[in-house]
Image (cartoon, rainbow over all chains, first blue to last red; front, top):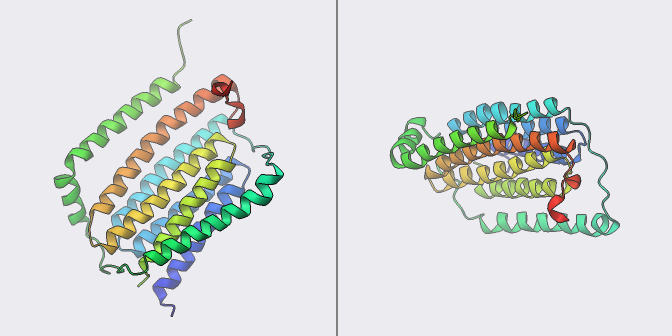
Length: 167
Length: 100
């Protein structure tokens, strides 16, 4: 029984998995970065499907916008070329890859089976008002700590990437 | 309604693909991208459980994960630029000083 929501979910999930596979298969880092952006936009669609509107907007703005722009900026500044072929041994190719696929399928199967009894939850969207009340009242101390984290990361990035002007 | 288990299976697959990319890719930039892939898989699980259990805390944690990912990307990019300046390469196979 395929409802419209399940159809939308299947399309978005196919886009997510295809983008992740493309990230692995592409040799040039800029192609990997672009397929990662596709994955993030499709994930934002999945968040919308679950009624998490604000998370979807943040996913697009911060992840697909800011963080991926940083990645692509560094790829272009460093003029990163295609990586050479990995010299994977025969054991890794003919035993490791099938075993990895079997492991992944088994983990997905058991997760799906053990959580199939969970309720889908309420269908209405989460209001941003409730979310911000929770964030700025109950979680205000962790929120302020993350601002310190961002500040220290900013300082660290500047100190690390600056040129030495000693001589 | 889409069952909760569908989202969790997709989240597990996404995390697994991130691990595969982390192990197989040799460009240090792509290794960083696979970390972002794993973080996205975890975020999907957070949002799914948040909806399934009817609690908003899961979505608050997604914001914290995104903030940590942004900080990690900023510091990581600085380190990558430093490695490129000192070594002239982005291949993780050539950055093995600690192995010797």
